[in-house]
Image (cartoon, rainbow, N blue to C red; front, side, top):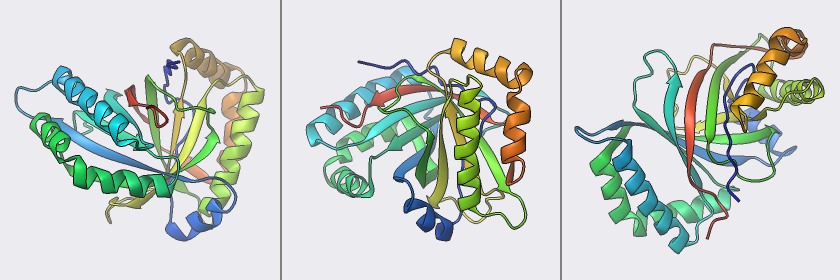
Length: 253
């Protein structure tokens, strides 16, 4: 039942952009809210301590009957990222987000306090809108995630970029890509110093799938195909890669 998503973000991108374009995009695909917290371990605390609290959170979420999926993200490939561990959460829709958050701030205080004893997530908490590109049918679980920061070319919109990512995803799968991917659009908490337009998040179920896709990208025409499509609308920086471990699937009870 548990999918092993050895998800590694390689030759792909995650997207985020402006609120006006998001409204137009949401009319075409099912957009869903996601949140991210950047956290540092309290002195003397480790991932083992976080795993214990995460298990208690899972019990709380199951008892509260909330449609919320969550993962811990451990930085793998990065330079001076500035935090020890990330927390990624996702809801199937805005209504589920509202119900989940309302229950969390009223009945989740004890678990929240236990989290605060292990990790400090006060520096960064962002809410974004997730748009599927080559997304799996179910909720991905354990794996590796790669985040690219992407900037739109002059006179290009987020709508145009999303359409290009859909085209690129289809073309890359035709060449044998085994990646799954999403576009994330920052919505709340990103701050005023963001110097890019969106993220493109990509994953693989196994490292062997990632390696095969990397080989296709480097030596099988993937890079040229992707550049022909995406290069016209945006450019993306070198990604950051995280090991992702599932805390809970959104449909778990």
